[in-house]
Length: 161
Image (tube, rainbow, N blue to C red; front, side, top):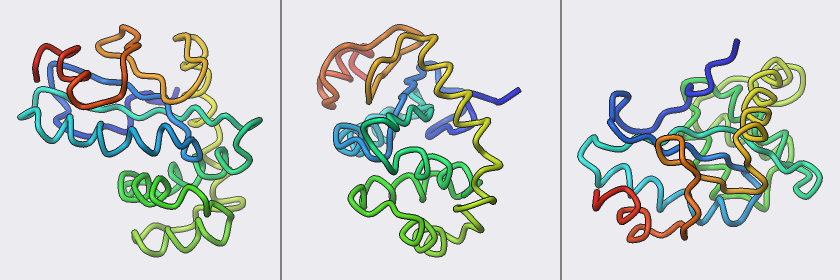
């Protein structure tokens, strides 16, 4: 069984959880990433972000391999997460291998990455079951967030965090 909450940014025991279903090739997810980081960083331990993979592989040809590379990066996940979003236009296998070296991760492409397919599939299936239709899809404490992914709007939705 895959732990759907394995990628947590912020305090593990934060009282508010924001779950993001994201795609590393999605420009909207790329724009949301620094906003979500700022939300957590400015919340004094009251908000945590959980990232789950939702690669829109029919629209984004490198989304699945990028998700697998992020998973394969292990405890370097968040560093890899940031590099993938910073370089959304360069997500080929050689690019992913370069990013892995930059963050100090091991093999993140090919057979090494395929070992993480069940985790990515579990995230995707959970997203479908939760009603995610695109990316980014956010849930705040289990409720779909339909507002803009802007710091002020998110803070208002969370009760002025």
